[in-house]
Length: 150
Image 1 (cartoon, helix red, strand yellow):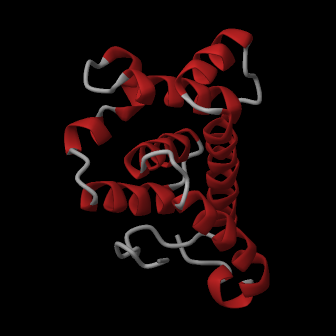
Image 2 (image 1 turned 90 degrees about the horizontal axis):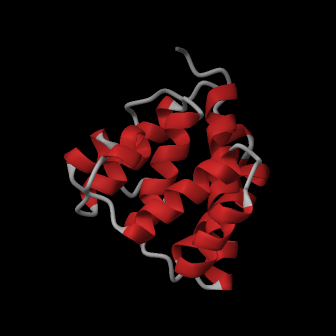
């Protein structure tokens, strides 16, 4: 697929706001490895090849295993995610579907502080925005380099 618009060049003003949110989230108390799993999982659901390329590379560079990345689409049936990761993934999928039942919210509330829950929700909303931008403007998967965006 050919890039339609180089959004990083032509949309600098708009994209800079997203980079600001991303920068804020990197300072969150939620562990970076968990944020990468959430970004990767939501990108799977949204079929964003560019973001899958990016977040797989970032996760692997930060010590994630291929087994856990390959198994992420079936995380409910695998034994290699922690309770906190499972809760975050269930919450992320629910927020992504715009349907967060009380049961999932209560599980998330028991695993994350209120500030972390806000940060996690913001992270889910932000990866959704990045997915939609990369899908709409057809950024080319495979071109991302680890640490490219800081």
